[in-house]
Image (cartoon, rainbow, N blue to C red; front, side, top):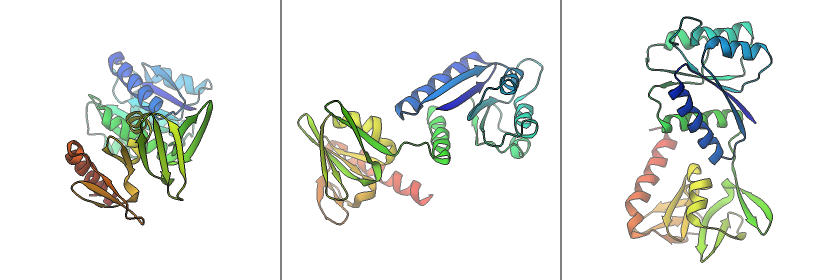
Length: 246
C-alpha cells in the first residue's frame, strides 16, 4: 500500500492531482491511499500524530501566511529525520532549485500539471522503490496466473483466445482481447501493437522492416498492418532513443 499525501491550498489543483494519481496507480494495480491537506501545518500535524506517508506532493507557496512547502520539507527531513519519504514539489514558478537542494526532492512539477509528467514521476517512484509491477496477469477459468513481463516474446489473438509466446518456447492460452491487454498491462513495458493479431515485446525485435518485425534468435517475421506502420515505426524509434538516453 502506497500512502500518499497531497498538500495544496488550491482545491482545484489538489482534486485534479488526486484524480490523476488514483487513475494512474489504479491502472498499474498499485494499492494506495491518498490524503489531501490544504496547509503545510495540517500536513506537519498529521505526521506528528502518527500518519505515515511514502510519497508527498507538496505545493511551495500557499495563499495564506504560514509555513511554505520548503519549510515543511525541512521539518520532515531535519526535525522528523524522515529521509525515506519521497517529496514531489509542485509550483507555478520554476526558480527554486537551490532552495530545494538540501531537501532532496524526488522531482519538481510545474503548474498547470500535465498528466504525462505526473506519470513519469510516479513511474520513477515505483522503479526506485521496487513497486513497479513487472508481471502479466491473466485468468483461466476462475484461476488467476501470472508470467514475468521480461519472458513474453509476443501475444497473438486467435478469435476469442489470446496466446502468450514465452522466451523458453512455452505457450499459454486464455480468453481475452489484445487491445485490452495491451492498453492495461503491456504498453507501459515497451510492447508494440503491430497488427490486430499481434503485440510484440520490443526487447525481442531484432529488426524492424516496412511491413514486418523480425524476432530475435528465431528470425520469425510477424506482419505489421498497413494502417499501423507509421505508429509502429515512431514508437519503435522513440523507445530506442529513450533507452539510449538521446
